[in-house]
Amino acid sequence: MSLALECRKIKRTGLTAAFLGGELLASAVPVLNMAYRPELYLHREASPVNVLLGAGWQMMVMLNVLLIVTGACALYHMEYADNAILKMCSLPVKESGLFFGKAFLIAGLSAVFLLMEAVSVAGCAVRWFGTGREVCGEVLRNLGFSLLLLLPAILLALLIASVCKNMWIALGVGVIGVLIATMIPAGQFAASLFPFALPFRTLSGLEQETIRGYVTAGAAETAAISVLEIILLRVRRAFQ
Image (cartoon, rainbow, N blue to C red; front, side, top):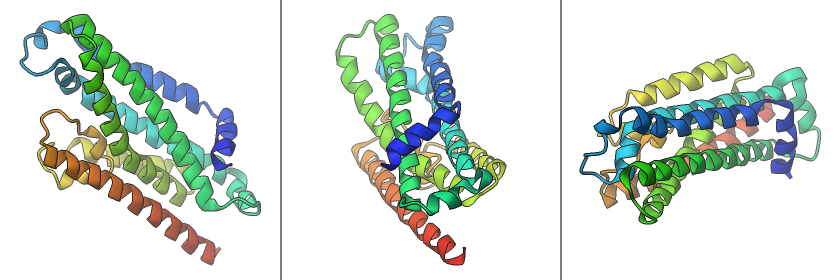
């Protein structure tokens, strides 16, 4: 019910067009890299997927997370405008249901744009590296890993947007979080567990133990942020 409601409400915004435009830009990153600088990548010893992700993944993920932050702010701005959220609370709809409906909506959009990026990377691997169908398995593994690590960032962006009635404050906090994430070194495992930093990790060069650590951290942060949001909503309701 909440997801269907969010899908109807999103028609009032340009969010779908913004996500599509942002994802076309992100998907173009590996294509442009290979079209204009192929000599930098064609002779590397790593697998084609790792080469392509190493060359453009940081920029692609930054666009992804910024889209998520912007989308979360836009979705909650609709609720706070003209006290619409108070009217929604008078209906038989839980406020936590609104939150998770928005989370499922953004997660669905995120899955679509990650798939677009995966198709772009696979296409570049076939076009410039001459690989075959074997590249699909590696791309899909990276896709699943990236989607799991993106969930904490989605929930954190929505939590910030749900707490801040002023959209610009929520947007500013989210953008600062993304900028902090870009400055965290990849080798710092503990620091890279920051929710906005997790999506910047890829399977390239990671040992199985490290991969399990990231997967466990992503699942734990997803659960922790969900519980924290429910607690915050109950506390806010008690003081309203």
